[in-house]
Image (cartoon, rainbow, N blue to C red; front, top):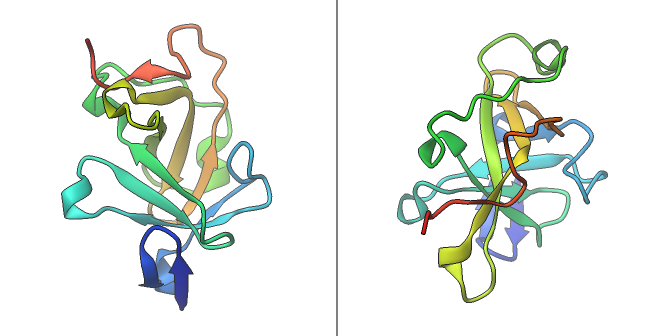
Length: 139
């Protein structure tokens, strides 16, 4: 399928690459179809491009890259809901306009993704050890 996006222009998306985010992303509960994009010049970041609203693309990062001990306890039943297999966790990144050095990652609301089933869910962790605005670049 072909979609026209605000950020990437026209994209050819294979139906096999579509990720279904169960329950949507916080703030976007009705938007559930996405594709994960990693461009060479954007590494280590990924883009979660929404297929239901081509103007929406979120920046993601693997939180272990900047917080080596990130291994939150996952809610009971999440593996069963997303399907058998290893889950990947991504943090949603916020980049203040004009201040990329102040970017933060939401470690309390990671996106859990099963790459085999292409199902994901944004988690809301009850965790006093992590922050929803964790600095990616340490001062």
